[in-house]
Image 1 (cartoon, rainbow over the protein chains, first blue to last red):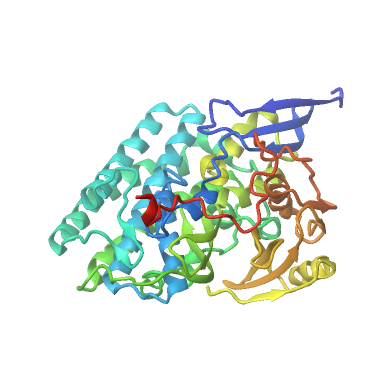
Image 2 (image 1 turned 180 degrees about the vertical axis):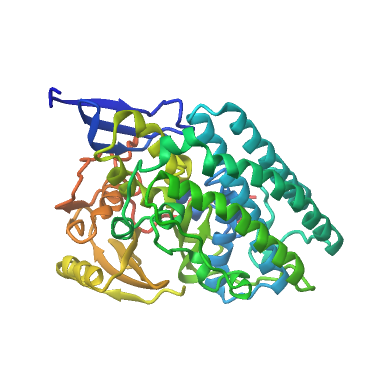
Length: 360
Length: 127
């Protein structure tokens, strides 16, 4: 033991990081004393394009903020414009947006589970998670026309309907997907080696999670029942949503929440398929947005905020986005303080960082 | 989710944040946008039991603003971001990156007041 402090750079290029973020890790021997993050490697300034695009066209740009939560970005943006203009979308459109939002959550969580398995050295587990994810993406493509970027949301509703026959087929195919996910999740929640790598690592108490503004599975994995789906947006008010929480306050808790949310999303989709009302999927929207609105939704990674301001013209004047990863960075800094150097990669992954989304 | 914003003075920022913290509110986001009458609006948004409260200060460019990190340690991400994109200085941040949190090729790229229209307009006589 020397107790001499050393700074070790982590990232922006690192095997566990799909996107670039840099951390200066201040270490004493093998223990991290402090982690100092910096970002800015993929800052695109997408928000500043808002005054150069018609608000109805900007939906496509909002969708491209993130390649994983693309659908939720487009629906949150449309929800903001609709709120600003007092537009009420048809019930069927609300249900369809909820359905695609939950499919997005499943494919995002499966993507994370695959990356997490890969980071821990579980190659076949990684392949299996992404294989199941392809089935979900295929459903998205079959119903929207887009595999990753769906382009199906529009101000006033959605562009495509799904026939009731096709919805029944989706319900049947969910049985097989659910069985495959059950097998997958057993490994994540019960494997001895995997548990040794995550249990007790990256501790974040419930009070710290709340005080540091953590959202999504990061907050819920610390026992904080924070989920925007508990508000009455989209069809969640009809579905009687209750958030899943874990109280282990560590990497295992965050993994457990995501695993259980896979099946919660399947249940929500089934209820949507049963309860979806008939009718139109969009309404005509006339005029331009005037005023300001604060639109929020629950993405797979947590609460997302779209702040929108218009002045009665076809171009918005302001658009600001706060994504869940940005607000989970202070929680990550708290988790890393005091951990062992070898645990840093998997602790970073447990917040499911999306850097492109964070920097816009 | 409609916005009801309470306008406050910059001298009230720290006290407002402390009050929100004591009442059990979570800091949701700090949003900086150009203000309609000139200068910039900085909006502090808080949440408790899924209900939002917004407070706003309107400041001229490059002003100094007290940090709310004493009450909300996680505010450093928003304050550093607003500094790096808009050029405001926050006094008392828990982690001050001094302009290196978001590394941009152009300093303070969003420091423009109400933006000029950039869409090319074609007049009849030009056609």
